[in-house]
Length: 287
Image (tube, rainbow, N blue to C red; front, side, top):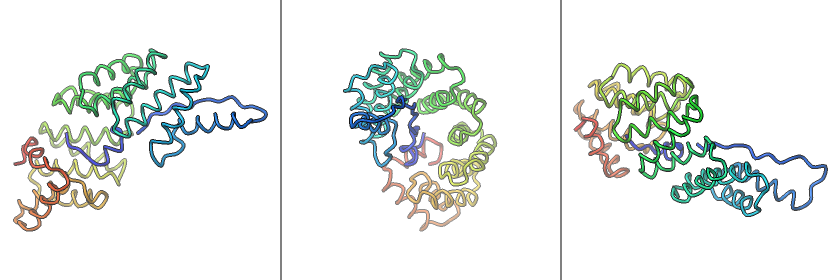
């Protein structure tokens, strides 16, 4: 699977924090301590999106306060785990999800979120175990199917990935990211018309999704339709000018059309952004 700068914000993923609201009963009057508690709840819920640190501060304060409600405590650990995942501190995130699951053994989102952390860490087997647990608890949990599908794809198990992408789309047809990932997976296994259909739907749902144009560009490369590939990579790069896979893909297509100078420049820029980009495209059958 390719690595997108946008995907590093996702998650995944790839992408996005899955929050539960922490409920604080209304009081007729608020003392200074009451106001502080409410402020920590808001921070723990991600009110301040400037960075992950405010969320960690708020959740840590709630955890240290040893709140009486086990449900709130489990949510605080889960939300702090989400913040650590967003920072790339996956071991700390997993520790927090562990604590959340000790308190609430059926906490579906904690299983899913811990699976994301394991996936980002490269521990795909543990990630799949967690997604399995989330799906067992809620067979209609589209995000868990999508996350497990991406994990299977990263392992190279494309039939299992496609099966899970199908399930995620049937449960929640508006998940643009899933249409895009299924497009990419279809393209990798050579199901190019199915890939085009999926990418077209992803672009219809979100016309400014660079990843969807990037995936369709790859599909056109494999179809040897160089001009269409260049057009899609141009669209992707207008949205995300430093996307390595689009720079390389466009360079590859330009070389195929005889534009050696333009193709060489794009490929050099792609390699500067991602050193292993040539090997990555070679795995896709594009040498």
